[in-house]
Amino acid sequence: MTGKMTCERGVGRLLAISFLSIAGIVGALMLFGRPVRQFVRDAFLRHVTSAHYEILWRPGLASAEAMSQFAQRRESLFAALDRKLGDAGSNATIRIIFDPGGAAQRASESSETPYSVSKTTIRTRLSGQTPELFPAADAEALLYTAWGKPGSPQIARWVAVSLVGGWRGAEIGMAAAQVEQKLGHKRIATLLAGPPGEFSSPDDRDLLGGAWISEIAEFGGPDAVRKLYAAKMPRPSVGEVTRVLGTTPSELDRKWQLWMYAYLAGMPSSSGGSSMPTDMPMPGGR
Image (tube, rainbow, N blue to C red; front, side, top):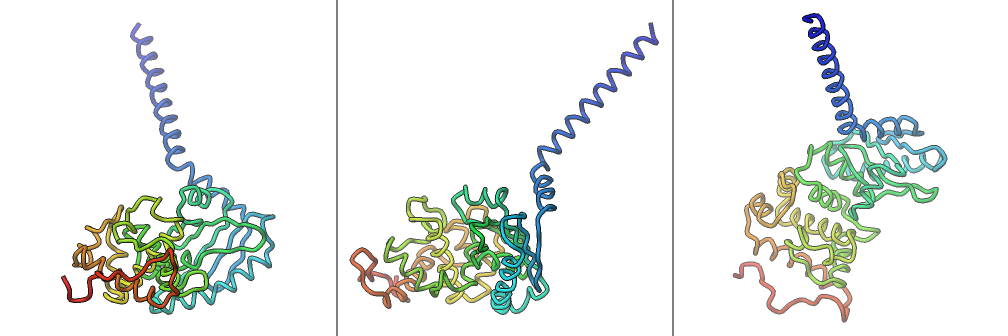
């Protein structure tokens, strides 16, 4: 009888260990399944390299020649961005993965940017045979190399837009002024956490956010931008921004409004656009 009970306890122990092992495997797959699938998928991608880039893509999506030319053209952008960062990323390599699904698809579906940046790896989609990518993606990857991990993905994206300094061929301030003519002036609180309906597209919000960072750089200097970049703000708000910059909400909005209307003053008037308000607070006013 004792032997039978011992045997039953042994079987029960084995079953318990087996159950825990299976549960552990299932848990690990649930936790790490996506990264593992991504790693396996990336292992079968084609790739080309240049001095500062590694480009990966799925066979059949584009030719090696097209991707090699893309990498070479990107080098001039890298040099310009790195120069603005004091050559802090000279030895960096940016990895660009043209991923038909995965992170690139999720970024697109989230109505944010058509790419995702993780450290110095960029994932984006390939539309057609000619590879394209917003310059701000490279800037965000270089900022990670130069300044480390950002405290807020949203602020990091806007700092990257500001670092590029242009938007689809136009100087960033003039491009932002065109959006203001169309949408009207947006306060900082609206930029940071306003409802999606305030903007005609996520691109407009990113452009205005990048322009605002450019204003911060102009009035507060690069150190102020770097403080914002590093500050841990999962959901940036006016309160958090003013704390980091040591200012007040009214001063924050006043400087932004002044900077923006300086550009608007040079824009052709539009019946549906913004005009300089006669009661706009001026420097030194209350």
